Length: 254
Image (tube, rainbow, N blue to C red; front, top):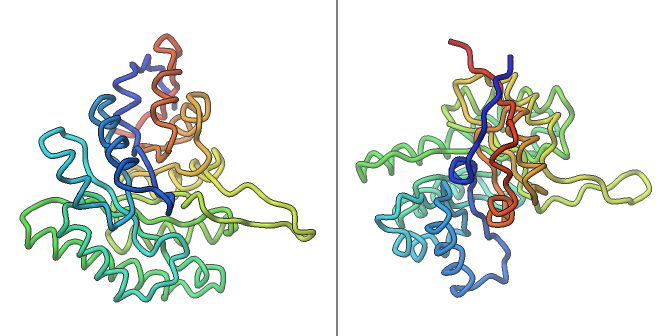
């Protein structure tokens, strides 16, 4: 069931993780990102681990959270290293952790490896958060462009069993190719967001990320069931938002 909702610019901003993960980004760009996040009241800024401390200081008292990526972008670090990286990010001020799962193992059908990888990171995050007396949200990046429908479902269930708070579509850095070497889509799709939402139910969040560059695409992801949007185009989306447009959000069961 859907319900119509006239969403204000401030409301759509509250769904957005304002993201800058380019390896060439420096302090000036991160400073600008944080200033924009405060001005537009985004949910968080999403930055590489080396900038977590800087972002936390810049955003202190603003209400904007600090999100960082772990095992990014390939998910191929060992689970112990991912857990350590996550704990270090939290210690430095991160409120949210977006970890890249071992999607190579998922493609091999080794879901015990996928599950234990996620569980170790979640456990590390929970311990560090408890030590610091704070709450931390853990999101699991599936990299859906490489996975078939059944594999996506099983990965979502692994994340849910491990106690993660969100599943997330993509890093935005994958480069899938067809049989003849042609580039294939690598970001969020309505189909995958809907599939993930149907699989995890409403006990978890679903983050759509990768290729979301305008208001029209953001609306499509929300209507498919996303509860967070990861994008480097947050300002463009908010500035292009039509507050009179009725967004048809899925109705959560009572």
